[in-house]
Length: 156
Image (cartoon, rainbow, N blue to C red):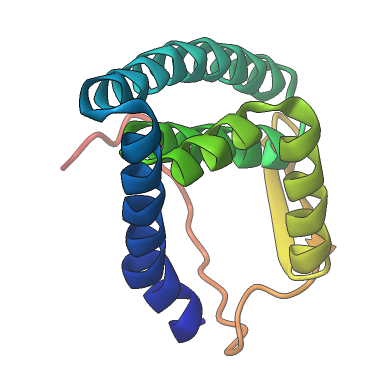
């Protein structure tokens, strides 16, 4: 994990710089900078559109009481796409555009859900009381917090 972080922080910007210089030598300085700005502007508009769609799906799933895992993961992918598209560079732009594609996000969501499957517990509050779906464990210490709410108790 440490090597992955180092590669993202140190190596990726160096590779980006190399490609920017190569494109700059082929196209010239002004067209290269213009291309980077145009890609960032178009990417921002696409991220906004996809983000609004993801938010609407999230709200609809929350209102119907569905599980929100996929919507949250899609939102995180769209957020990452926005970060990649706003960062200057052609490789980060390619990664950002890839994250905006639904099949790529679906693949990432499936991979992430397989990694966390069996390690989560879902507690849903309903009018008849809480429903617990054990899909794993709460914590290593198995602590239980028992809370009784009091109606009209609004002390802060």
